[in-house]
Amino acid sequence: MFEQSIATLAKKLRNKDISSVELTRLFLARIAKLDPQLNSFITVSEERALEQAATADALLQSGKGTSLTGIPVAHKDLFCTEGTLTTCGSKMLHNFVPPYESTVTSRIQQAGAVMLGKTNMDEFAMGSSNENSFYGAVKNPWNLNMVPGGSSGGSAAAVAAGLAVAATGTDTGGSIRQPASFCGITGLKPTYGRVSRFGMIAYASSLDQGGPMAKSAEDCAHLMQAMAGFDEKDSTSADKPADDYLANLNAPLTGLKIGLPKEYFGDGLDPKVADVIMSAVKEFEKLGATVKEISLPNLQLSIPSYYVIAPSEASSNLSRFDGVRFGHRCDNPKDLLDMYMRSRAEGFGTEVQKRIMIGTYALSEGYYDAYYLKAQKIRRLIKEDFVKALEEVDVIMGPVAPTTAFGLGSKTNDPVAMYLEDIYTLSVNLAGIPAMSVPAGFADGMPVGLQIMGNYFAEAKLLNVAHQYQQHTDWHLQTPNMAKGA
Image (cartoon, rainbow, N blue to C red; front, side, top):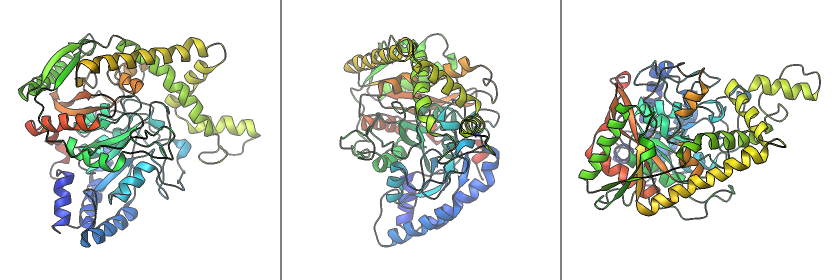
């Protein structure tokens, strides 16, 4: 059951071949058996899951429901879930139980899906390896000595190991695509504003975007059907009707124009990863696509630009965590200032403190123009590069990351090397365009993801392109050894 698609499971549920309660119990048993090795969940909401499964069964019995009704999914632990612990992977929120539901989880719940629990993540979504969580590092199911990628590494590992049919993630600088690539699953970062951020605990508000993570593009499309759309509770939500993401999955790719940015294939890219990507591109040519080289000349500026803008916004967003209203509070503070200082010092981990300090410095008097304002100008140039390129081609393709998953602890003391893992993903967030990672092969026994980028609100096109590729390849069907027969 754990290897089957949403469509297949939905059919079994409708035909009464299995009930949602039975399916949910199966996944809860897998979590209990396998997750001690992976650490992909922070909270397993067994009672809530079984209640939702029983409700789903009753709905299906009456002949109602959607393709998600009764399907067990997991949510990244920064989506607020009413009555269920939401920690953001941080000691700061180790005791926070939200009194309301995020729009994303609410819509998926309204579609009838079952919430298995909340997945582990880099603290406040700050990281590229999922080693920054207060609850410990997540392990990659393909090799338990390797990272799963971050910050949505818990969601990626859970889906790859068959602990959930699908999961939600968030992507601020690559945090859906990179773990999807490292764990051999499919992940979509929608256009900024396509999926509501209401109830999503913020890292960098102008960059954060929620999206689906699943085995296949088709499964991601099923999740997008529920997640996407305007939300009046979110001032950054795009007031534009959502597409039918399932309608055109089977459209042929004849005449598709693919752009390959020369900057994505230079120094720093592992040659084995490059070979996998080029093999995938050749597969698209067989399906009728044409390929041309393009240029994104400001790509190299995406890292310095991002690591000014994102920490600056984090500095502002995380100022609300002060030990007063909710979250961690230090013991026996001497006065208000002591409470603020010790609560934040105890509650935030090293990486979060580092980014708060960088952001506060960049926004301080005398440095705002030199750093933050200049970074925003570079951001505009990066956006214009994509706009120009997408006038010539339909989609842009390249690697998600310069390497496959790296060893646990191998880059924790080298922040520059860690940040360089995001070189091919950050620019997408700065521009606000949609992009996804699709399993494309293996290098040294570890998964490699193909990145597909498109124009604003072209998620349906990206899903179509990815789905057609997956109809002619089986990389997305590969399963880690630890998950087989469990």
